[in-house]
Length: 339
Image (cartoon, rainbow, N blue to C red):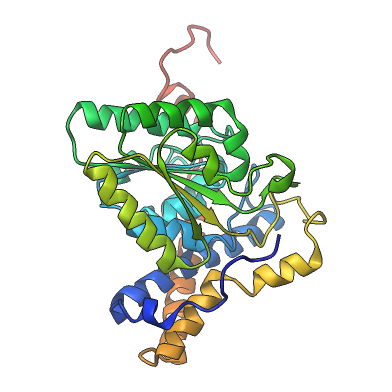
């Protein structure tokens, strides 16, 4: 599937926003991109345990949605959580500590790449089971509604998750109870290596949500401003008791499903067309075209991000691992048998 949206971010769209806000969006997206690239090489070096599922090319979905949230709103994520976590306010250092398996990581070294989270920042640890976080988000939203709290929940998942029973049960439950949850479907066209056209006859995944009677929109997921605007509108509806809302964010990952995936199932022409729709490149060009930002200013932002991530890597490399005693912390039951 080739891109379905115009490549350029419309001038009248970018003209609505202040320079400082646009630069913040660029910095947030660049932080995710640089983080993922640095982590990729760390795994190739064999410096980190486990595996990774990365999000290069999908930065606009995470940043656009999270910029529309309040600081005390909640977010649930998937096996591909790094970008969501960074956009929600987790630091590169606390995530890197987790990836290196340190006791100082955001989940004390017990979660790893697919279970990043920090409840103090509104993000419970990500759930690697495809679709597993969707009913959790609905349950959290139900609790918020019953407690008459103003927060909402943003729930990220991929196109493949919309074929899971958990998706249909949770969306229906959210619909009948008007729960304050924004379902954010990152449709990157592939569930692992299976193209979305092979798992449904529907022309758009949003129809799977409209079947349950809720508002559903398809958005250019590689235009961070388009994502932000739709997520902000959805958040307002949810806070007003008019939710839930489903956002189909059309995007494309520029990396493999996991670190061992060479992407041979992606046609070369398709990859090239989507590379030209790179959300970072599009925002960068739009900023320069607007004339209020210079190349040197953007390069300064990039350099600062790179330096901060490199400092975090060096700290995380030397961080202490968990001890045997840590096996019995954060668990519901302890063994009576000595280790």
